[in-house]
Length: 160
Image 1 (cartoon, helix red, strand yellow):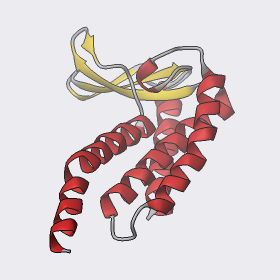
Image 2 (image 1 turned 30 degrees about the vertical axis):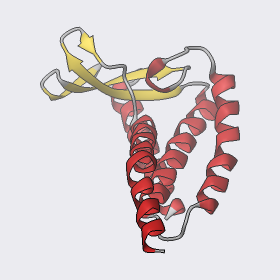
Image 3 (image 1 turned 180 degrees about the vertical axis):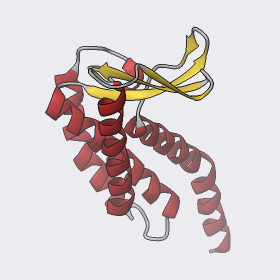
């Protein structure tokens, strides 16, 4: 589960970043490509900070954090019960997102972002597949640990 989920995220992330760089990046054919009007569009941006452009020019710091996060995620995964699909899937999303952006940081010194959403001048910071996977993994895992796992623990205690 871990390797499949992380692998899918990693491949999607790297393929889409390569396409964005070739088509939208320096020397590309387009500057921006509207997908759903101007609400959702593709635009090539480089990011030397964290997800969504936070804390720019900290590539080394975020590379170190990613290198430290990878073994933590692997250990956490090994402690999950075998029947816990949702948290195992979420750790796969987190690992794939971490690896996708780490590869960019090592190769280029920055992360390629290209998904641009918003209306007019009210725009969400540009992001990529790895950022999306990481954020989705965190939110689902937090929801699961907060609401669903406590329900399973109570149900298990009641049945004993």
